[in-house]
View 1 (cartoon, rainbow over the protein chains, first blue to last red):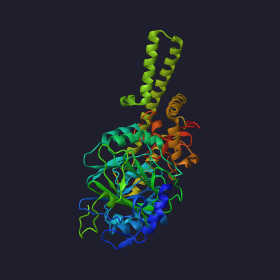
View 2: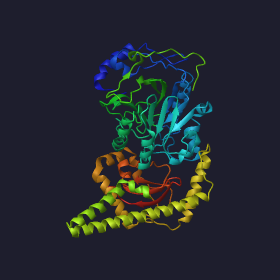
View 3: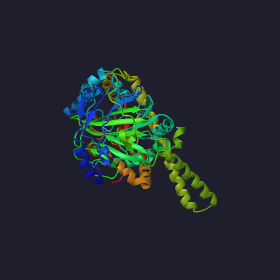
View 4: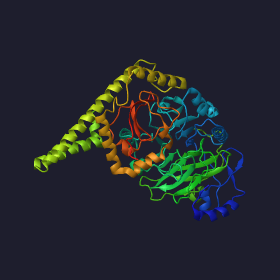
Length: 335
Length: 203
């Protein structure tokens, strides 16, 4: 875990204070977790509970997952376990969905088998292409790409825009300009493989891509950007009012590959992980969970207005004054 | 083909022509302008030749695609996808027997592409270099053979957007890829190397 140096002392205090902290996953038994470093910075860590509001949008996020090894399977099993208490409806895949060959055996070993319990339960996967993916994957129905390299879909009050960052040609730019637009009430979440910001040593940010597409995001009120490629987890401090996440370690991992940086909010490079998310109205709750079930980050984001603030903040549910409810009532409708 | 005039390189070419005409009208540096016009004309010819060759290839691709059991819409079957890709590649290879490097990137077209890549680097070198570096450095070892499969266990190098903006548009059947320092023209669905320009990327 890497945090800005100025937070370290606070973190130590907060870690001690958090020793007895219990996070309750809705509907499940209380699970002891490591509190989010983001919360440690400002105040004593607060318990985070997903509201599971009726009609909310609930999904999981994985990136660089398609190794077919035991680590990918561990994460998949952890996802199944978490879904028992946090019933997410779909999974966002941030690319490198199938490493190596693309034979039917590869699809089976690196996707169908690990996620079989989720697929059998009707959970949908929405993939983007990574640099290890053959673009022919867009014809693989379980990836829900509709035969396209880039596409959009809507879930509740969230519009997802999925790009192919491997090949950002003028045609895709034109398409993006037509698709992306400031919205009065909807969240816009954009995801693709290559991160615009990254403190990973191995790759780092793609500044050429950033120069080209970030102005569009900023102008059109994009709220959240998700990327993979860097085999770590990182939540970057909001840039130009946009929340940036990297989750490229749901299968692969570059151990201790993050550098300390002032732009990093939270980093985790010691194990594989995935993220669960709930968008409820103007709020987006998130929790990042490692292979062992440890929470490595969590928080609540408030939807930015069209004119994004210069420095959007991530608040703990308590600090934000948001109503943090306990487990959802039995039978709460899952979307 | 008309929409390709909206490309930066096409606009630059048009601007070159316009600049040449204006200068000629002013009667300044007549000899130099004559050379520039001759160069621009050669550039335009090279680009037109490239477009014609690409159009011919796309016709061939479509004919090959029509001769095999095509995956027209997404399928649950990874077998069907693999079979389609394999059959399509074989059908294209059969129609392109004996094709060698330079079948599309002829020497004049290569020269024009080197100028276009050079222009992109002159205007935005650091971002392009960063973009290439942040992709997958391992691709330099890929063996490139025209009319053969791109190794599907090798990652595809990301194309820097600034570079793509400077290259002629392609039909969806084709794409450019950087492999090491080489520019590859790749058939997307067949996963096949159509042609290559060696060592076009500056060190």
